[in-house]
Image (cartoon, rainbow, N blue to C red; front, side, top):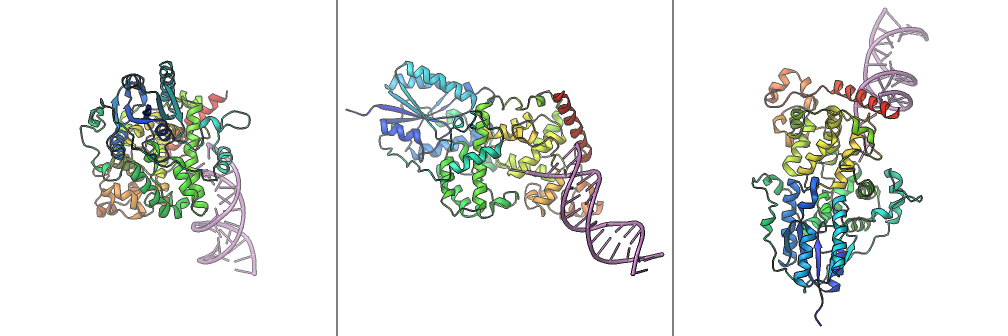
Length: 474
DNA sequence: TGAAATGTTGGGGCG
DNA sequence: ACGCCCCAACATTTC
């Protein structure tokens, strides 16, 4: 008797190794692997431009490792799957769980619909170290503060889990009505991604290479080095993790195999921040849209398209902010230290709604992830769970002098400042005219004059935020 | 995973 | 020798 035909629905698990749903599907029968671009259900959170570019190449890589047997579809996933099942006499569908609110809602519906058709639906955890509903406090409520969450979870994860090997893919089948990948229109018409392209290799192979490169180079001084954007001490695994080209379990296990030290400990801590973000999104599914602390939703954010645009384009006149924003635009990525700075600047110095920043990141980041992006923006803005206090305002000058003292990072993205001496790099407005002249910098011409006064905007933010807090308390 | 304001200490110049 | 001032360096507090 021939094995029954099953579907593995690839979503944010674009890999073959350590893929529990795929392996289970292979065990159960001959597998048809499918990918569905479901913009219909994503509403406000359709994939951004940079993510689409990444996905396009990730799907090419995955299809290649499946010998071209991956089928592509567009549209409402429920409709696509339902039709596929009927056409091909599918008996079972497999997937790894996603946690975005719209996906949870959609997948619940799909499960019910398929079950009503007599099809078994099997979902797995392919993405997180722990399911978010299994990490609650002893009193049954979810953690809202990272440190206790970390203390609870970390010891439970210390014994490295066994990984699932790549399954036998000899019985994989291509669905006959697959669209060509190009029909998903993931590649933009205007090739703005040229510079992004040179930086990354999407796909499972690239993911593992990135991990190994990091474990054997960057990790040895991770804890301190991770704060210096010019250093290559961060993992750059975020886009691979987001698309599931590598699993958090794989990352955690490989790190655990190394001799334990404070660098590895700290790296694992960051992986657990990712888990924490998912806990927040799972339990407070409104965090992409509204503040965790409701008082912030009444804050009179400034609506100023002009200022927002200058921030987006890296034309604020604050070199480290501008370098970060241009890194984002050119590479689809930004170093974490600089993300905190540009976010603090947008929210606290420009007093622009954190959701504007969140949306820009969503569109520009190759690692755009609903949980991490929302939780992190709310953290910086001060309106999140376990958030940064409202009075913590980064100073772009001080941050530059501390974390990129010789401008190796900053000047890479701001070549027009390449001849400015260290002393004035982060405050060109204070530089004597002859220094500027000698460096070939004319403020307001080839580099912007600062768009706000740091001191005054800081005080204004402190006032306004303190007032909001008062009114919330009353 | 902040920065500025304020407080404290101690060395050196100077009358 | 001493008090005084200045200020850097560091610590603490406040936003």
